[in-house]
Image (spheres, rainbow, N blue to C red):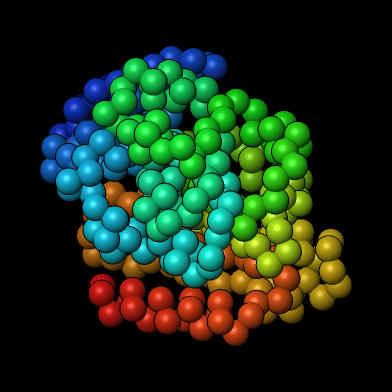
Length: 276
């Protein structure tokens, strides 16, 4: 794999950490143009962002404005228990904590990130210094089957699958995004809870939408109509270079949506459109 000295747009990147494990390589790099956002790569593909090491530059309001697709579901409900899958321990977890969610569980399939967090506290202060955040590393599907917690929101992160400079697009941890996996996520949601999918590419978003429809169809007749009544989908259009790992958002509620929640989502959406 190439060393990350420049990205596909020619921007200068400083590789600050490299770790090997589980037949994969993890790199943490910093773009000199955007020093407040460290980027995590696994086997050459972007897997997450780390804003927490620079709190004076990555304050909560700036993050909400810059990453509206992450902020929208966090502001739409009154979540108390949230599960976030494969955020690389970074952006989504920090934003959830900043929004006031008291209990956050992160699950990471990349075991190397545990040692990275322990050895580089300056990048992971938001994890290590917050007693309301619990992190688990390893087999996510196995951990979910052992879990008895019911969550208000479950976030599934699927960043861009294309590797800069590579010849083949590939999806990381493919087993986490199957129909069977979505059944596991759905089972861990409280009635009225919300499944949130953050996707970096249209193909990944459409796949998640199809799998969600199939899961709904299994649980209740009329899955197609139900999807229209309980789901929101968004695409972010921007002229700025996509440092953001996500361009698509799917929010799927487990059960009927109350007028208050629907109104809050609509109001927040209008606000974010005005800020663009």
